Image 1 (cartoon, rainbow, N blue to C red):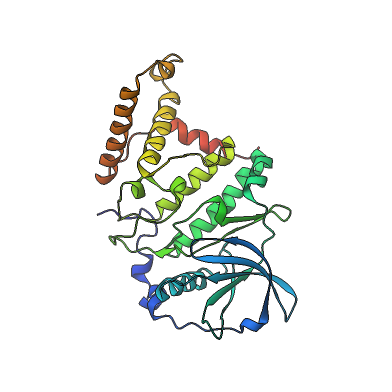
Image 2 (cartoon, one colour):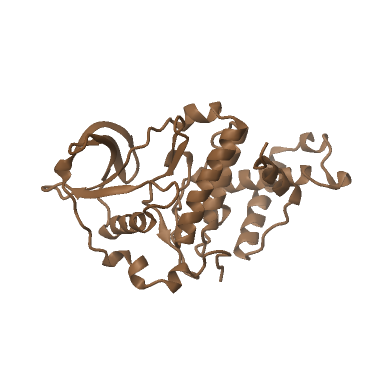
Amino acid sequence: MSKARVYADVNVLRPKEYWDYEALTVQWGEQDDYEVVRKVGRGKYSEVFEGINVNNNEKCIIKILKPVKKKKIKREIKILQNLCGGPNIVKLLDIVRDQHSKTPSLIFEFVNNTDFKVLYPTLTDYDIRYYIYELLKALDYCHSQGIMHRDVKPHNVMIDHELRKLRLIDWGLAEFYHPGKEYNVRVASRYFKGPELLVDLQDYDYSLDMWSLGCMFAGMIFRKEPFFYGHDNHDQLVKIAKAIDFLDKLLRYDHQDRLTARTPILPTGESRREQQDARIAGKSKEALTGHKMPHWSCAIGDLLRHMFETE
């Protein structure tokens, strides 16, 4: 059985009321307190609008939920309530529903976000370190509260660059962590899925969020979005294994162990490449399902740590 290395027993030690979202009684606010201004986005499970609170003229975000199971809605609400006030966690202000259709909406604090495709290419090295650190604070907090986000990606990280404010949003796929429990692997977007999800390993933990953050970090540094671009889950796994294997062979302390410039450009036939892809995917799955981590050069870790050192 796999078990999280940190915060493994948070929900074991807390009363059932903390994580039993199915027992939640929702306290509904007044929908007439809010007016829609304009549409700002949509997802698989919701449509998102900029809105205004008519009582105080303050801007807000209105997330109108599409028809889904009640327990999924309760889960998102319960998690947002449990995380309220946490660093860089988007604040849930109210919960309302249409009187006739009973369609629920979540009311959030407003963040003057700049689209990541516009913002990221303009960020300095210091900006990148700053925002990754702010995102780490949000993730460490939610993990410390026994919660996995399960959908970390640029689309779910709102940044008001003028105020240097970051908020982690969209907790619709988030879940409470319980050691030994098997979870749905159909979470996270493909380009940000950890290898464990790609090989259907169900007893995953908080670390899947850290993989997603790593993909974001790499994309910001190298100006490549997404960083790992697979056409399907198998191809995604191949792309990951190839990239990490290549880096590992380059970043070696012992100069005699490093790849030569000739090695990566040696010609190979298509059939040989296909065999290599299959072998890479197979080895990755074997390593994961056996809960064995491959050896990565410590130079990679040193390189990343260096990026966070103060100038």
